[in-house]
Image (cartoon, rainbow, N blue to C red):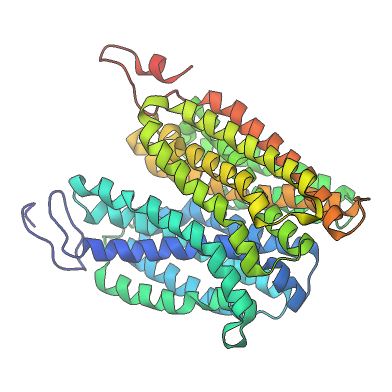
Length: 500
């Protein structure tokens, strides 16, 4: 096909300068998948207390409802993109969407915590098959002049989802539509998923599978096993009194992850496929970005869980009121993104440092608010601190991926993006595990009188731990380049410009 031909057939991918007729419809399908994933990562934080009240379960069950999904997503993301290359992006998108929709329906029918957590794992794995294909489709169907505009829609759509997700989840649980209660937060995915499936069948182009590619099964098993061995004892250890097997599992996690690195290097030397391109770990910006991302996303997901536990279990808020409590943070995040767009080119890495400092200030403000408000604490008293946390998170997240991936070579970009996204999910799981455990441990040891006092003490203790995590992220940020791209005239070494 000539590069001047307009591509109107959804079964044929766009090329070079061609304008695929249904590209914007394809983008809507991809965005629907992204929104479904984001909402499912958020909703169980709001609905968790209601879920365990209905079907039983321990405090750790609330943590696992989030951690199981994000861990499975992280493991699946390591191979999701490769599966699209091997079997075709459209085919894997359809399989992922159909499976994710089915898994959502299964979650809505769960009758025990173990069953629901298992279905959440399935959701996460199939979501990981789904999401990488959408990004590949966008790059394929949009001409170069429109790619930035297409990706530019992700920020506002994800921002609106972050704002509306907790509120929608709270409303669905509180409204008890059709008598479904908390089950409606999963059932709502069924009509959305079916519509997305129809749209994908009609509008997504099919690419030619590459039969020459192979999966790195040993690497996948070591990486997934290492992540599980790391998170499981962090969640379950407190309930079992921190027995010896917890520390043995943590040690085994280190062994598995180190072995993963060694296996990847050996496979790369012998010309076999790898999950991660080993040369990436020789780049300071990338390795620093992985460490920074772990600390930052641990703080992001962990504090969201702690806020929900505090306001629902401690203050007695309904799920809807709990969702509204999180609104200032979500609005602050959108404002932070806007600020970052205006200042990113001038400030670069400093924008992340400023954002981290604002997050820390907001967290300390949250701690102080609990102290002075006492039993009279409510949505409005928490709003300023949460808004500040949100602004800082938006300012930190906006330049993060661009800066971390700036020094990655073209042939490493797919591996780097997948690894960074997987680490984002792992960080979320670790944050839920660590900060959730700190919260429940502090609650066990609280000697304050009354429920509000006990939960307030637990929330304050946990937020101090969160402040420590964001301080670690602040320090690690200095490992990143000053800017994503050189800021000076030609002739200046980019390495000198980018690194401090």
